[in-house]
Length: 250
Image 1: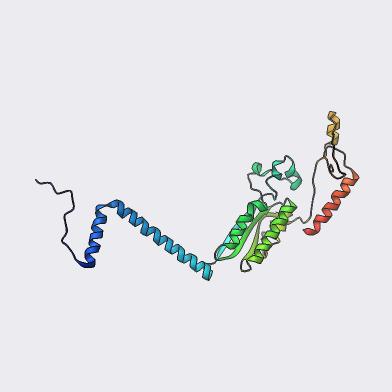
Image 2: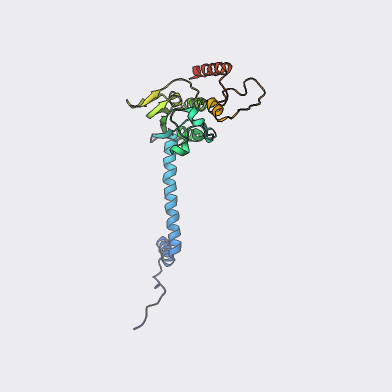
């Protein structure tokens, strides 16, 4: 028996547009690599066209409406503050460092870009701010509060809704107050309005161990609230005055 030829059998010539289309199909069938690349190109162009049309509708008609979610969970503090040994105990009660508790910190440096993206999202009608924080740094709480107010003024069409999970206490409540509305569960801990300063005193322990504390400083207010020295009445009065100055900002 005779073997069939390995090359395609020539087709009868067809003139006009039909002939050109037939020639292209024959060329593609004989070279599958070209067919695969061309198919990928057509698919990519189709997806890009659909995305471009959708983006155009969203930017011009603000449709479909979208709601973005930003989650703030953890202690309010800078990353540098949490690297010190006892700073977490001075910021909030029963709060361990983020790397120990497995939770993230809340500060302006970590959330500034996320908040900008949430409010500037095409078609954004609302931003849902999920808060679960016991509080922390007064400065970072104030920075985030002012950042949210500035974004609300820049995007008046976008509503800001704060949702409280377990707690929004102290600085967490400070941040939530920047929203148009606060939604909390009946069992959520919300409030704890005020300013607090915590510390430790090791004067008696050092004396018992026979250790003497030596501090050399220039300036009357430079070495105040040293945990290894007895509390001076002037330092205590200065600290109370500072807390009273910070409290009205809350």
